[in-house]
Length: 279
Image 1 (cartoon, rainbow, N blue to C red):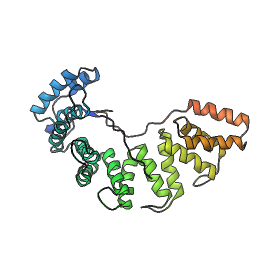
Image 2: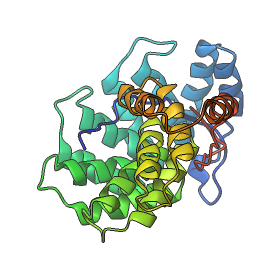
Image 3: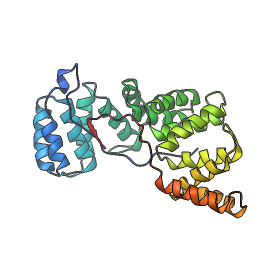
Image 4: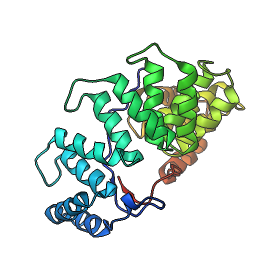
């Protein structure tokens, strides 16, 4: 579909993870300092943690160097710190290593290395890594496209609530690429994504309601979802919504009620979040 995730959130992990002494040092003070904008203090605390071999501190400090937050940006140092944390089985650090290798941050892109790190993180349950791995499989970066594996990894991320993964999974299922064609299941995942405010899913869901594909035909629902997508500046959605108005498929009263409903609509944030991560 040519949709590539370009924006990257910055996450900082800072709680004790059970079962591994390497994650045991207290980094909450560093998180408090970070949240208050006291980056030098956060760095001081996390550097002490790094000296003790604390994987959370290694990861947190790596993110600061990667983003240039409170310190000069240093991608080599970020990579080194992520490697230290990943060596202790830190899934988020594994994901960041894959991300750096895929994007070519600090070195030329290396999709084989990116896939290796994403695989480790995804196998440990990291949904962002599962989504990124699925994108590599779907787009065929560094290898031939493998849509079956893409579907499997999108499904993993979708079941953990990532809206972009849900949308991409729905697209593949709708068109029978890497999975059996199933309009009803596609609508299920479009809906899950749209409910979280993902605009492309809102637009496609609106189109499906208008066409009666995978759902009973419903012009009102189609108009509502297209309106929500329009509010996020999707021009194609706006054109389709305006066409409904031009063709007078809805009464003035129906349109007024739907506009009010769209104004009151709030996304349902269903994505599974690690409470230890600041995004």
